Image (tube, rainbow, N blue to C red; front, side, top):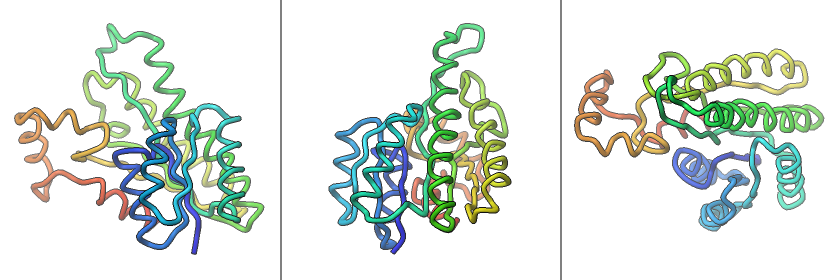
Length: 220
């Protein structure tokens, strides 16, 4: 049995990844800034360990990993950086604080968690890190604020992590969800016109699901 920590696992895509990992027999660290949400998801997993931490706070992340290792009895050999935020608004009017907060959580948070994980994995003989980026990190979308820029940066950070930690047996990959009916995108699809337009743009003729993303993440 392997051990996995999923960030932002208190809801949405992160929750689905955590539940899918549990079904595959993994010990699962359910990490979220919302402690109650982490507890709720972890309670549905026989091997679930709730972890409360803000991913952009290094001390909290280190404490969460220490707790996980103490309770699981092992170093996590899989870490999924799913935690992220978006602050919608036109760049002309976007508060600088919204820009900074998005970069701090999405990019700096991924860096902090990845570094803490990679160092420990390397000492233990290796492991796998999967970072969630986005279609908006490849193709910009209007009024997405710093979100697209942060996710494009996460993709490059993933490559840099891969070349720096590969020699210690740590693999790093990124997954860029497209039009997903769930997670932070769920409110967008409450508009029938948006749902119809985006569905029509997908070759399969349907929106993606959190389960689709979980399957790719766990394969990696």
